[in-house]
Length: 275
Image 1 (cartoon, helix red, strand yellow):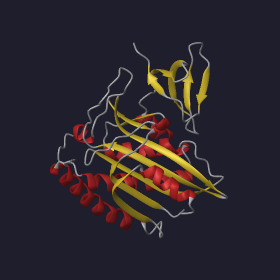
Image 2 (cartoon, rainbow, N blue to C red):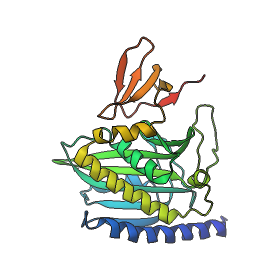
Image 3 (tube, rainbow, N blue to C red):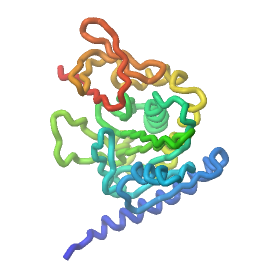
Image 4 (tube, rainbow, N blue to C red):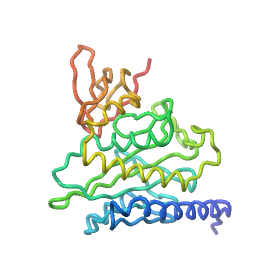
């Protein structure tokens, strides 16, 4: 016989109601620009990103926001799991159509910048798609793309720690997490309001990016660059010093011999070198 903690059920219900309130606000804020946008909230799903990619491949290409109270198979970069207990984190994905020939390079940085500027002055961007506060991970961004003839369907997934999680199996290489409530010092921070703010930032960042690209954001990004002038090591073992990013969003790496190389692969993992 399996029993369920009623407190967990109550928490899920509270979060579901909060996200439904956020959904209405998100629709009101964005339907003028995206008339056919839909905003959905589910109690549980395997992964909001995976669900929207499934829909895209099945021919559903309308703008959509999908939020979930919990994810059973949430994912981050390189297939890493993203756990999201009810109320402890915010998980959502935004799916938007984009011209097939439009540039994508730098989109994750543009999204990260918009979220960082909205959430807290302490947030910095760890190239290419994490938000850090004092070298602790606050949020992750995962962008997936389905090419559909002359258009693309871009899915932007965001996982944001509301409460600081406890790592079940911490390792020396793992970046410690931190929650927004601890960052802001507000234990009563509302997940619904936070969801509405974050989703609206994704819409705004996407619109700006498709109009002006990433190059228009370089100066603002530099102010939030968590790796600028930091010694780093890539996942292939290459070491050097991060020297900002290019107009296309590539990481500029200065190697020990003084040569510069631009890192463009979104599969590259960057960690500050041990001192």
